[in-house]
Image 1 (cartoon, rainbow, N blue to C red):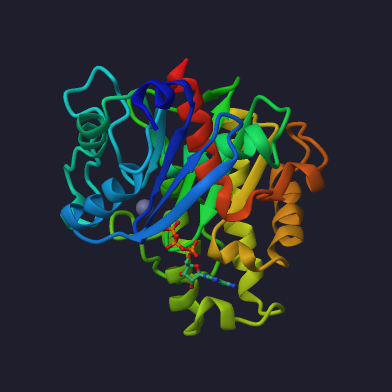
Image 2: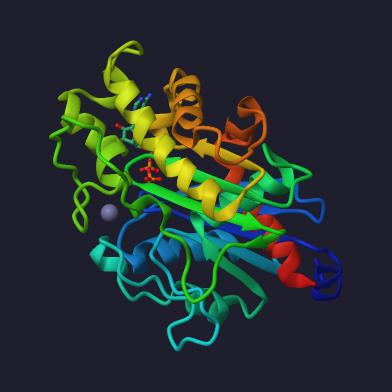
Length: 295
Ligand SMILES: Nc1ncnc2c1ncn2[C@@H]1O[C@H](COP(=O)(O)OP(=O)(O)OP(=O)(O)O)[C@@H](O)[C@H]1O
Ligand SMILES: [Zn+2]
């Protein structure tokens, strides 16, 4: 293919950079994925080599990257585009955006993995045709992102919705597992907390175990805070722990009890919902960011 023709074809690149894997995808102009790989997150040199090998095969118009973090999203900051204080030590202070810009010299959209997932769900999934949503993943950690008035939720930094403090249930003596705050939301309800509380693998906890009521209560408290602060139109819940579908009705019930009629919210069946794009929310959000970065 001559370089002249290459320039006429629009192709977008997307990276969902996670703590365990980097999912990389390339799409055509219609955002249909034409190639995709999953690369384990090892040392940056190792992982980035594989990332380059994949994208070097294409002539990309632009890219979108949604990264694990914390990351620097402040364009005025000297470390814009860096992964900052992550507990994954080899990735601390790594200029991920800078490396990609240097290699490809194209416009690149940059945000958190969960903001990208929120954007994917808003553009194509559970919050389609809406302007405001929150996306919360409850997995190894708890992370939340959002889109408000059609814009990604970020400013000086980005939201860290998993680390808010909530009120403990009376008699709950579980200490919590967040290395920074112990009993923040993540410390109380993420997979590792669930496993420490029950002494079982998350997938092995029976659907009718009493622990789900505790989980649901704390998750509902967090969702109440997001509701009171952000007024989203939909809250989308994903991540490994949310594979436990019985949590949804329990969370909706606890949420209604906690809000106690103080503010209005949409019908709960449509307000607190699972992801529609499943594992693709992040990558679709990144492709949409790539498309916008090109404009
Ligand atoms: N079916 C399940 N029921 C309960 N817990 C589960 C289930 N599947 C996975 N988990 C828990 O979810 C966690 C893994 O979450 P997830 O699959 O979202 O991976 P992750 O991408 O590593 O998480 P994160 O996005 O926080 O980095 C583990 O702690 C696991 O025990
Ligand atoms: Zn915390």
